[in-house]
Image 1 (spheres, rainbow over the protein chains, first blue to last red):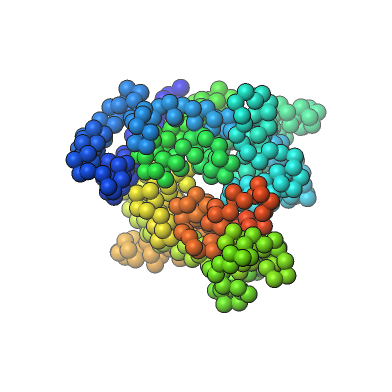
Image 2: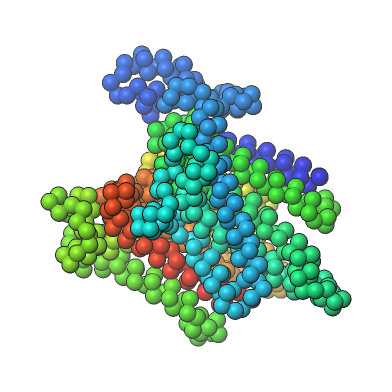
Length: 315
Length: 272
């Protein structure tokens, strides 16, 4: 428990640093905000008035304090582009991104853990080579590249999957899910290599461990040895890796949501970046950072439950 | 030649990866002078022509020859990504040597910095900085170098920490060598293999990131024949059945990253 608290404290510090970095990046933005909203022809007095209204005429430090104060009260700020609070946009986009992330996880976690286990059990044979090499090669192909190739094969050539991620209102949940399969696949390919590699390494370590030999020597059936002794130990590092890969997953969302024109957090960040809508961009990025840190804390807690050795003393 | 290098030259992954990368490097160096058409010249009367004997990979929406653009497109990505990696290697190695050898507050700052950087996806970090600085090839190079520097520094730092436990470091200290001499003349040559592995891995990520940023519109800018940019400009045409405008660029990008990755993997297997 103390380890989890310590992690939470460190995470808060990380979030604070993150907010400073994001805010600082916003300050280097050339030109003033009201001028870029109102356009080059606007009256100078109107620009000054809008800057005052948005609070962008203040020095950086009070602005940062004001922003953080708002964040702590659940106020994410006002979007420059939409002239309305940011929070509802983030909420809607987050729900969409979570649906995409959930489908991706539902595919990739069983698939990659299964492949990792298979590779470890067939160590050195062709199955192992194929899974390891295939996984490693797929991991480095950018999402938009694999996405384009998947669209061409499954959407245009074979015509088995819908190309668009978006559905008309009133479509059934199952159909909505079907539309998310093609967008999820590039993310699945990226994550597959990482997770199966760690699952394989964990399996091999557990297979070679003394307790596995003991279990074999005392006459347990091979199936029981694998299921009860090896798997439980082998999958612990995999959980940590799945949590840290959340960061890659969220970054991949920016690209995949753009490619499939899906209105999640990723495309929200990109749209805000293109429109220099800084409050929206800052809120989107902090959401991504918070999601990553939350995933890391959850993984820590899960490991603390599954592995009695991971207690405060060892950290 | 020492054993690891000989083993490397016999590994099929190294030969295949090396072959692919060498092919694209040749395209980057000589390609623009060998291609059948000027990669920038448009021909509106011949727009969106499917692959044929005249245009092997077809033409794009303003009639530019896609085969010529793919060959010429090796140059922008193979300049930005390696230069960024090289910059990050020089800065990261120096930083890693200093923090690993001297430790202290710089070390603490570095590990905190890495934690913040790793808490955000690379693409998102790069986006934030590029919005502020404006998109251009130079800024992309700087951003990637900036993000990779602490990551390389961390690898170098842990290698330095391991070296400092060996006898030759205290021996040099007792000889009253200067810290700079110990870091760069004594330790650095011994940690070159892990640095080399890290550099090839980072090069793969750099290509990945540059391509993705160009696709998002924040990387290499038009009218460059860059592959990511080509896909960004044409992927709306897929639905209309003009798959060749993006398919070949996607295959080119995929082959380059897989080639670099095969090199990195076989180097790692041979050196560690």
